[in-house]
Image (cartoon, rainbow, N blue to C red):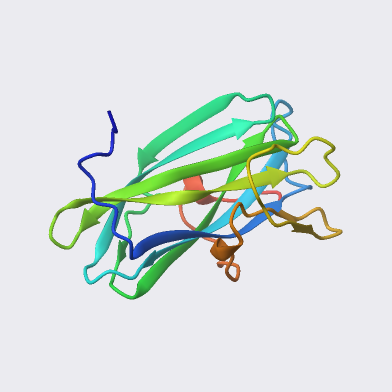
Length: 177
């Protein structure tokens, strides 16, 4: 049974992964040495405002280990996105493998009080020079000499980078940056 069967999935409510950056010099715990910042935009092209109430991430590392993270809001906020507008933020994931894939969803309420869901498109995070990238479908890639990597799972989801979020601890980039 689909756990989200009682949610509407409006076609005009969509998520783009705008940028993924490997933060080579971030101070990280020794058991999770790889830090990736991701920049996300939630676009509301519906007729009603949408308030995002929570999120669920499913992250799979290179060993196939799956971590699911659920929580209220986004980086300490429950943004209301008016029709024709978007909400952009950034946060990060820490890993102990050189590659990982993330995907998920945001849940919320529309202006009529109906429960809505929108999917976070699957994207890959890969340390530059990794020899065994995850096999997760077609993708486009590019990387910069500074160790940044961008690996969208679907090139239609790429947009310009979102500004850094200065929100709560959930969205803060490690202090060393």
